[in-house]
Length: 323
Image 1 (cartoon, rainbow, N blue to C red):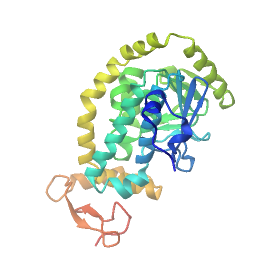
Image 2 (cartoon, rainbow, N blue to C red):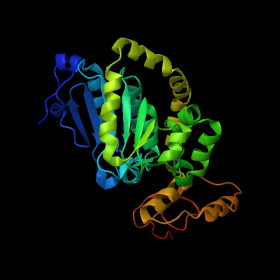
Image 3 (cartoon, helix red, strand yellow):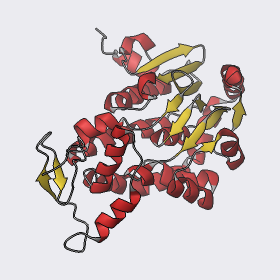
Image 4 (cartoon, rainbow, N blue to C red):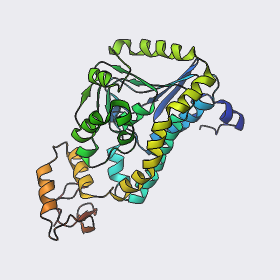
């Protein structure tokens, strides 16, 4: 059983194995710490436990004076990170908006610790970078992508809003028009397009990814740590400003809309691996009995007992026919 770190180790850093992480792999090699989301079976998406473990590893890397550079990546070659674990969201979070509010706290805390880590961070993009995974990518200082990587945002297509970094930072990084293209069209951006747009710094063959990261880390090591830390503080101004002005509002809005019909439709399509019927969704909204789309939960699924908005023909949680 992992022991709680002592006061001394909490200030100066602790051995990675002392934390007993279950969702991430944490290692320290010389002046580089590597934090790897280790959930390849679900394309390295993050659940609540992953968020808490990432935040803990970020804090430890920040206080460890031996560590100069932090690398963030995912296990395997299929995915860097694909955002929130929708299975967890469906089963434990979205049916209880107050729990979504708690989940968002862990998400925000993870991001705040990463941005304020005080040392250069590199996103090692080894596969798909989707939704919250791209927000994790953008929270890092630099990004190196393997040439097979694709990046996209999916909120507007799947029942959410990418307000956990994407709406705030994409316009700063790639410009307003391209940010709107990514956020509104929700289409794949290939690695070389991402390079052209400024969303990543380098694109290399997957076989050269680790070598490239190592060389980049060495260049970052050969700089003055105090000057680097304050340079980051200055560079963070616009990201911090847009984040602090919007993230609290986003947390409340996303919590209130966690059980909305659009979110239920998105989860159903994800679970069933089917395409979204956007025409039917728009038709349902325009032909609601009272002339407005209702967000009230006043229909109960007889199969799983989930609460659904009136007018649903099928349960958004289990897919069974209602009534």
